[in-house]
Length: 78
Image (cartoon, rainbow, N blue to C red; front, side):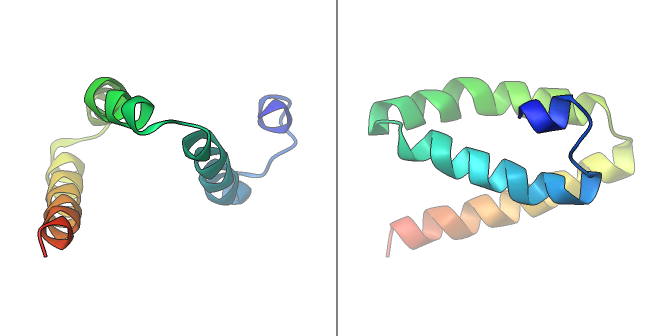
């Protein structure tokens, strides 16, 4: 994160860095912490993202997110 803040990280490296950071963060969380994150932080993150994109992008992202969520939830019930 320090490298990103100092401008040493190239934008194309950001997805891999964020993926690694999220893996590390979630591996240290309890199940309760993870559920709290989903119920509190996910709506906040989504709001921040949706506030910054146009209506077409909102519709496309919402459709993609719903499809992924349905797939994940269907996998839990099988």
